[in-house]
Image 1 (tube, one colour):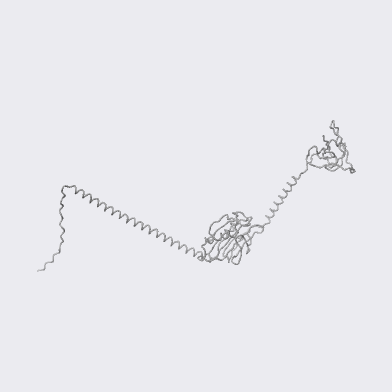
Image 2: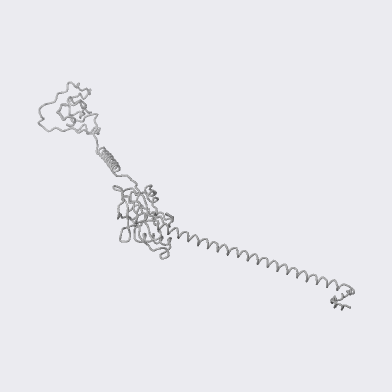
Length: 367
């Protein structure tokens, strides 16, 4: 059996094998040298704690084993010769320290992320109107020229202005360039579809999420939501306005579909060039007049067709009536001939004299 006794120095409850009674051992709690009390093996009675020998001030001449604080190991470990184990104390294993380090790392990461979010500047919307570009839009930060984004790039023919959020992977940009006037280029819908095909061909788009036609300031447009080659989500508006082609794009790798900031930026874009608006208005009015003329011509043709159909139907009805009367007349003649053929003597009908023409007598000469 094991011997349990209290260390008079640190108060730890120690347990050793019963064979070590009367021998010197080292306390596992305070590393003091103690003599194990002897216990009667028959009665199992050990002396009181105040009868335990005090600590020896002199170092032991021989090497003594040092008790290691562990969580309640098997009894065979405690009963190894020359070892003591404090009772009531539990050691912390490797798993405890791993969990503690993981928790501290998670807390530190959360604090860092929160600090980054607090340090990052927010969206400070400001109106911007471009005289050379002929448009107005709201940017979430101070706009700068030459901003690059998937699908747009500044060059000799293309002007770009936009804002990139510092600390956020977001970009908001507008590009514009000159194009041929209507009548000397492809129709608006065909031109916009060709621009989308060009984006797909040059590797800018990884996958198109949404593609729909719409109208911006009265001009034909296309809105394309796509995933770019860099993994970000972007929304691109293509607008063709008389002699200008616009590309309005917003998004980034930290932007999700339906982001309200992206939607606000796109919806704030409007054409402001008075010459372009006037030309578009004139072209719209002319197109409306042509549509009215076309509609009137189509309506007149439809009415004429209905009238001709009615006349033809009436002529057909008259012809059918005449044929019916002729058939009735022929049938009556045949019936009359059959009736007359059945009579014994055909009656002689008097022949009416031919009417005599009255001649005007010449006036008598006066006597």
